[in-house]
Length: 416
Image (cartoon, rainbow, N blue to C red):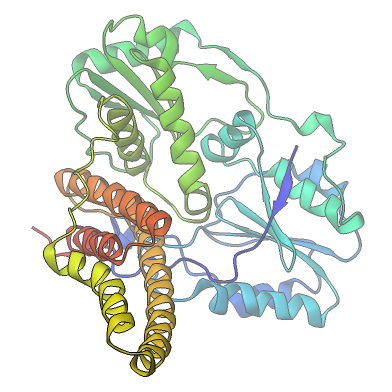
């Protein structure tokens, strides 16, 4: 079942991150040309669009006012405001022409003005990321135009096909490739892959699976040829894995989807960056420590004094005199209100930094060692922020901010 997720008011920006190759970025979207085409064309495919769909099935769900735009992914090197430059102008053009617009940015499907159509199960996410098939999401968005309260698509023929056993020839090809090198890139993969996995890990990168083809389970039979090692098979932005600690491998994949589904669909995230995120999560889940993170910085003398000085001063004021007590209480309450406001603003600032760095980490082209260190610092920042919110502790918030700044330096520092 697909649901419309609430459209965020502010889009996350990839600020300052070095892309893995700006020259390979998809072409810029010609917004005025698209806005003009909306008046006459129900389906507009722009140069660089990567999404695929069953056009016959989609056209059968079109209403007279419905329009579909297939746009290229947002470039990794983009530093502008995609909402202001793309979304808002196309939304205005659709409103002026009294049209309902379905905008597909990369493989992110948005019913403009209402929300985002997302898969709600793993087969749906796999078709979206590993095949770039947006048919189910586009049809659901079109059906929602007729019925804004729709919760389920009634076209069961659009559901992703089941997983099947991988052809023996494909399994042999992957096994031979991984025997020769721990990272094997199949013919037909358009992007460069320089991934160097750690010990007991082998990674195969395969091309996107054609739309409508059943999904072959490659990882399971290949892993049987490499006992004791984790075999990762990636297509597009989708990762399958089989081997030791299978439950951790499945959970690591689910965590990557939960944290990064929006940027994975909207941006042209390199496959190897997605694999890095998956392997980082897998390693953390097997660390045996609470996420393998550094201990929280202990409260120092200054923080201890700041925490206990106000109540001690209040007790002394009770002894000294009533008038001074009343003035002191009023001043203390003003200070507390100011401190609370400043603390909440600080939480919002650090939260925004951590969210933006999540996207930057996904799309960064920094060396693998820097990415690994940045991923550790990023999780540290997130853990400290959560604890600071729970305990309302400014010292922990400062520590979270320091960790986020460390991530920013690792991702955006001078290239080696």
